[in-house]
Every structure is written in C-alpha cells, then in structure tokens.
Length: 210
Image 1 (cartoon, rainbow, N blue to C red):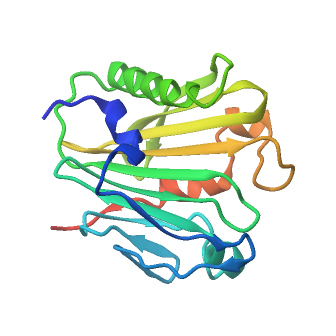
Image 2: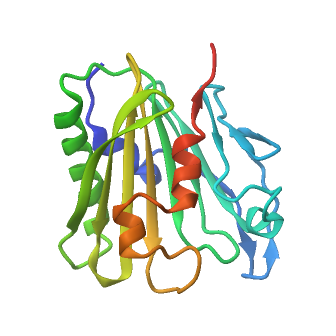
C-alpha cells in the first residue's frame, strides 16, 4: 500500500488522535487516560501493534513521566504516539508505525520521508532547515537511516526510519535548543546519534505478535 509519508506526521489533522496527561496550570500533573497502556517502563500501543520504551522511564525519573503529555492515534494504515512535553524536558518525541507499505528502495524512500518531516517543521520556523547528517543504521538487526537537521537557531530535528519486510517505523524528536540542560544535546551528540532519550525509543521498539 503506497501512501504519502508526510501525512503520518500531522497528528493534529487526524480525528483519531487525542492527548492526555501533561500539567494542570503548569504545576499539577494531570491524570493520564491512555488508550494504550503502560507497564513498567514500556508503552503498549492502543491497537496492540507495537510496544516501545518510554522516553523517561518511571523507574528512573518518576517526576518526568508523571508530567509527560501523551498523544495517541491510529488508523488502518498507521499507529502513532507522541510523548511530550514533560516536567523539565519540553521536547516532543514521535513514534509512528506504518503497518503495511510497499517500498522500492530504502534510501530513496528515507530521503523523501526526511524531506517531508522537515517541511512540516518549516511551518513553525522561518529558517531553512540544514541537514547535519544522514547515515545508514542497523537497529536490532533491521536496516534503516538516521537524519539530523538544524531547524534554525532554536531547534534540532532528529528522525530515524527502520524497515521490516512489509512495514516500518519512524522515531522523531523535536528538540528545543532554548533550554539548557540534559535534554538539549550538543551538535556533536546530534551528529553522532548519541542523544540517549531518542535512542531509548529507537532501540526499544518492537512489533507485537498478532
């Protein structure tokens, strides 16, 4: 099934997506009424199609998870979850699973996908995106690609796609550079794919047996 890859990144335009959690008045953690579920440090998608590590495991940082907003959505084509913002981490982390897809050429497909992702971001920034790196990766035995862009002076955009036989998943991180701290990686860390919150999601994705 061929489809426009950009559509999977515009969660606001899909009625199936809804958010829960976050903070009330910026102070009190709001309850999470998840469509999926969380067990330990793992999130399970609402349609049972995949599981993925939480960006901020409760076993490591319970306060970050308590304040994390979660947005979920699913269609016949894909299932998506967005984590963020949290308590001190104001970034957004997207995980999208494309359930069925015919792909002719992983490299050219990833180029189109990364280009579409940056186009979505340009609406939020007045600066032209600058690609810092694109490289092939292998995650849990599956081939994929990693890309990082500088979206003007205030934002990094990290994205990775990993391919299975007839499906793939995408992890994206929209990182604010305006707040200093552990959730604002350096350019070197971005280029070398060393931002651990992003890697936790990328390496912790598993397709659930149907």
